[in-house]
Amino acid sequence: MIYWLFPKLNPLLPTFLLCPILAILIGVCFAYFKGNIYLGLILALLLPLIFIATNLETIAVNIDAWILYGFIYAIITFVAYKMAFSQLGKSS
Figure (tube, rainbow, N blue to C red):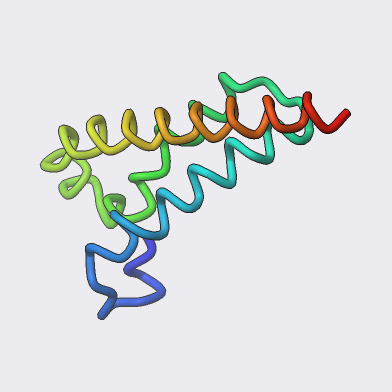
């Protein structure tokens, strides 16, 4: 999907830079606003669609990458949530 806007984008940029940063931001935002972390984890699972979802054929071929990276981003989100939540508890 991101390639519709930026067709010459290097595939490693969203995979290793943009999506982990977004996963961290999701975790911190859900901790700060005291949101349900399960919703944040679902959002993190969907993050790989940013760079996989160009068409249905691409999604079908890369379903394993979607699951793998989705779980990695969910773990990053959960760790960021726990770290931010513990810091917010200390400052209150």
